[in-house]
Amino acid sequence: MRIKGEVVFRAILLCVFLAGALLSMELSGKARILPLVVMIGGTGLSAVLLVSGLRETAREQEKEKSAGDTDEKTELNPRGQVTIILWVLAFLILVLLIGFWVAIPVFNVAFLLGFGRERVKTAIIYTAAVWLAMYGIFHVFLVVRLYGGILGLSFL
Image (cartoon, rainbow, N blue to C red; front, side, top):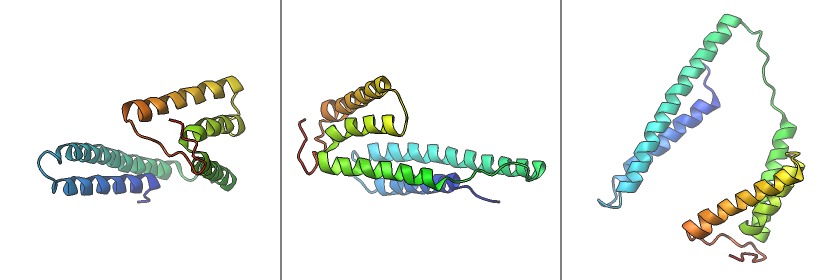
C-alpha cells in the first residue's frame, strides 16, 4: 500500500497531540486542565483525520487498480514552488525589516496584485480587512505587542 504525504503528516500530528497529552499529565491539577483538553481534542480530531486519510488512500488505490493506468499523473511545477517560496521569504524579510504592522499591508497588496492578479479595489479591501483582523486579535483582545522590525516601525 502506497502511503501519501498527507497520511504521514496526519500520523505525525496524532503523535504530537498524544505526546502533548502525556506531558500535560505531569502538570499540577489546575494547570493541566486547558492543555489536556486541547491535546485530547487534537488527538481525537487527528485520529479521525488519519483514519479518513487511510480509507481515502485505500479507495484511490482500488480505483487505480480497477481503472488501470489511464489516469494522468499530476506533475510538480518546480517554477511555481520556487515562486511561492520566494514570496514567503519576501514576507519574512519585510517583517524582519519593518515589522508586522507595516509588512502585512505592504505584502498583502504586493502579493494580491503581483501573484494573485487581483484588482486594486479587491486588494485594498482585503488588505484592510486582514489588517483590522490582526489589530483586533493581537492589539485589542490578546494585548500582544508585535515585532516592530529592525527599523522599529511598531507604532502600536
